[in-house]
Amino acid sequence: MSTSASAQGVTRARIVTALLRDGGRVLLCHRSPRRRWYPDVWDLPGGHVEPGELPGVALVRELREELGIEVAVPVGPPMRQVRTDAFDMQIWLIESWTGTPVNVALDEHDAIGWFQGDELGELRLAHDSYLAMFTEALAVG
Image (tube, rainbow, N blue to C red; front, side, top):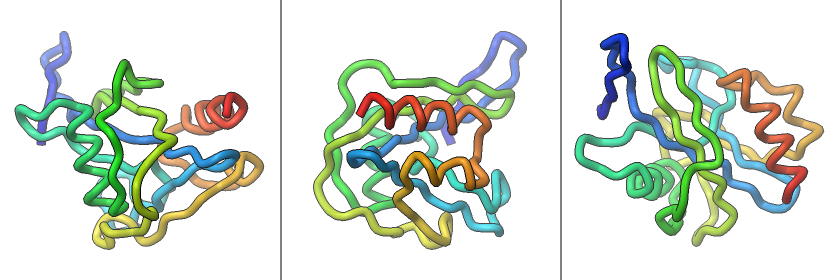
């Protein structure tokens, strides 16, 4: 697991995720109830940046491992960054990929699904900033 150190000396995981948008819907992964961190919530696909790995390259790898799709390495900065005591997460908007997303990471997710904006408020989301971010991303699209 790749980590970064904060000014307080706390080591945080480096996470990359994708907001896959297809028209008026976004793809989310349901984290298995057996997961140690953030169990039984809907989350963005992605994962940890490996030591020595660039974040964009990590995102391409994670989307291949979790969803079986191929994406280009993102160009430019992420659309959003989330920092907590435990992790630094970069989120990229992805609107083009090759393949059909399927749940390849059965040990991590027990379901994946496409959701329209009016369905998102009914979901238990992994982070409290997600709903506003999804709503904003869908409004622009």
